[in-house]
Image (cartoon, rainbow over the protein chains, first blue to last red):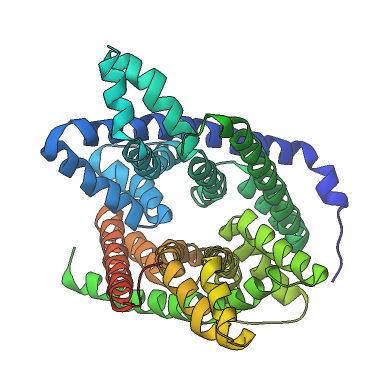
Length: 220
Length: 214
């Protein structure tokens, strides 16, 4: 077995471009997923039983089925119901919805963990619902759910690799193509694994640093 | 979608279940106990190796691990069917996650109980077998069940290297019948059913483990 890194070095610009797409897709999907997940959690909490149930079903279906199948359903099945999407938007939409389902559960757990007394106290001192949300619920919840959120966000980074299967030109696809063109699969995938590993470790370290900084706000 | 197509999917789901049982339930779990023991060991080298294993296999997407193993094995002269590469990748990946879950469980065993066991003169082995292991098992069960369902879903990725399990079968049928919508929805439904069964088994086990609350 020969291990030739020359061609990896020669194609660094391509790899950087793929990495850029991966990071972009990741940031966009995490952002959309966090926001949509938050809306789902709020709606399920305060929208009454019917809304809660109507949202419970899709959330559980998305959490209970493989992301790959969801991507295939949207990308290959979509055109049959008039939803023709290019691979990049299809991937971003699918991953955002997938992320939203998971994040909504984390947000929900965060809401539930806030002591009732704190909300009552906020109401007693005359805070408006918006003030209660921005000054009590959000900060308390953020410190509580941060570790789980960081985990989920790292998981999302790894999920972006799946989008290579529908030919989104992200890191995995770029490097696989290098492997195929040069018949250098082992080199390519080793480098690919190391890049993801480094990214995940960096995110993990950043998450731990954020947790340490926010630890002083923790009440429980 | 016709009944025959659905039956073909169910037939293919059998391989999904077999792959999961072999790699998550047996190989992955056994490997995880070893890795967990390594990360908790007094030996620095062993501990470092265990941590490196966990960090790598949790830090790299399963798809990438799978492709790496799939192409790596032939390059060192091991010409194995893609099913073997799939099982190897799934076992290694889930072992890293399960090792962390187990480690968390052992770390959460209340110190007082272990000290009490030592006080009444239990040997180290007896303490492990009668106190730490059963309590840790009970504490980790929900996490392990969760890992099962996550990994079962990830098993869809092995379709990429040509293992004809549920997802690959749905893909092949979708290509030949031009009905991706129904086929992927049906595949998703079958995954959902399997996951519900796994969750129910997990809940049943939890209910049966009635030895006190910790």
